[in-house]
Image (cartoon, rainbow, N blue to C red; front, side, top):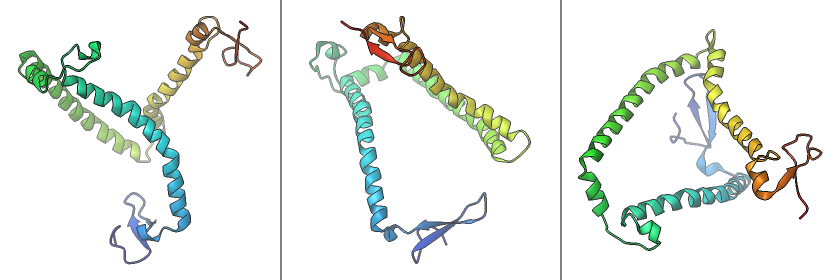
Length: 190
């Protein structure tokens, strides 16, 4: 039996890698507490989704709107609508078409190369063989680098004496706050 072909309360799915059955609740069998939990989850994530929508969709929409205006419309602050003229102009440009073909070719070639190399590596790392743990750690190291770099950037921004935030807000470090010289901040007396 497959998911969606349930005749009762639950469905089962055989997982191919383990061979055991997993029970999934049928959509109509959610009780009031499960619905309440789902509602709470939606309510808690709604502000984050709204913030992402505002910070991502507004700039994208504004950029698209600017493409239908003359180039200096953004600098003037008032629209100078030209419709699809900008698109026609750029599509007729030979240099743009050449760059587009090169970009699409490079994208296709890199996709094929990444798939040809990445799929065998992923399949190899999915098996329990000698050295698998080591290579899994090596592959995951770049994922750990970005948060470390971000933390160091914040540390340097709050650094007493030369940090950006310390300089702009005229703050000084208070080591007694958390035991680390760049952690605690207290305002100087005016």
